[in-house]
Image (cartoon, helix red, strand yellow):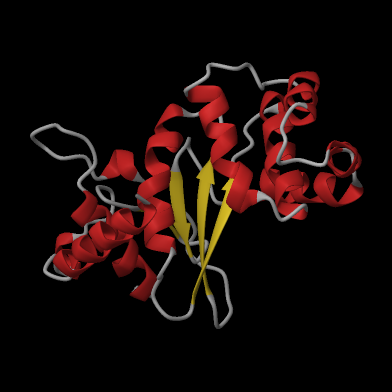
Length: 210
């Protein structure tokens, strides 16, 4: 299924090349969030998400398939958006899985637990209980990392990036720390969800944009 999604995204990418840069409009498909973007040779692309967000769950196949083969010189990052203290426990879950190098195997399990199995993972206790009963997770290591300085530092960075990049909600994608776009900005005018071709065209155009 994942390989099929990658093929579809590659096809959509080719189609998106037909959407000219002139057709991508500030204030419609994207916004400028800062006059001066991040400096560096590598273009940083951040997906701001929340495990509790249903739209983020639906967005994962698209953004992750695109990230399988991003344009040259691009680094794709997933970043929990943190708008308030209630969002910290799930953000810590993500960073703990990242430190344990378990995102490939467990990241989607978290989404499925919340949105398919309807589990409540909004508190630290609920998360620890879930992790303890997950065969993919070494619980003692998980519990230690969940409370670690490393994870707390990453949470602070997530809070700072959410604010400085002016992330209005989830899911949104920032490019170069200067531009922001998201599926809600590229909906099909006739209905039917996200215009995948226009989203990919927008993302790739912003990567090339000064």
